[in-house]
Image (cartoon, rainbow, N blue to C red):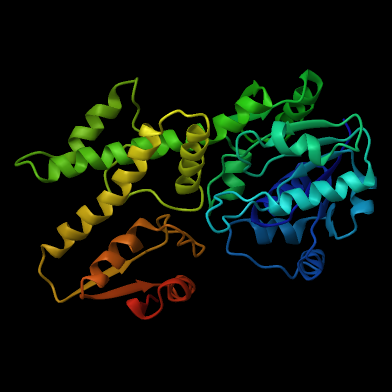
Length: 369
């Protein structure tokens, strides 16, 4: 097996991918357009709060980052592409940076490469955009391998996945990806090999189903809270013991938030509408998640306090890194603050600074030592 791998886009996930590949014996060359970022990684000056990453970077010996596309293309014919597809205005996952990279590859008229896209792309991207972007290249294999990792435990979840989803270009391309993960993973995941189009839809289907379970759990929880002698935890524990349901993500509490769940749910809503299929189900998950914030705010206000304190406000509990995007706890805090009550956000200084950037003087702040 060829031990050279190229990773395009050395953001948080691209860096984790690169270091995990390197740790398992691969020679990894990363590619990033940010020269300063590349230099910091190569000099091992880069620091992050993501667990294990700093230690893996310091110990690495066969990983570096280049800003030279020709050096990347010379290094390996196998490229993992993990370029940021951010939310820009109303576009949930923008392909603008991804498309720029593929335009660059097309200008090089590359031949006989296997390009594995691992960042989030909207359904139809491979058939409707990617083929045209790479029209001057030859003998390419284009596969889709979205990753189901979790923020704040990226290394752990990347190396121990439940399932590897492979939208394979053909059997040979799929075999290459399987062989790679068999040497990489610490566990023995299941491999799901499907068409690229199926993988595009599957990626968002999984996230949306999880949002449905969370919203359903909170729906039952809200009903139980308003029912005398009913216990929401007992009810949902019993529901989850049915093997058709399962207990994962079926606990009542705060609604879902974060980088992926709200956006992934939105993508499936958007795509179903393009196909003229009503988006009742993902709409319901989203709409109840929004309602649940209002419900929780009213339950909290029933305490009739003059001020309310919220702590650990990242969208993920006990997160070592400041992740507040779509934090449901902050949504509730905002509702209460907008009703004229004093709301105190108590957290570590990094989270406090993130909240201040987004909400300014809406809240009062207290640094948790």
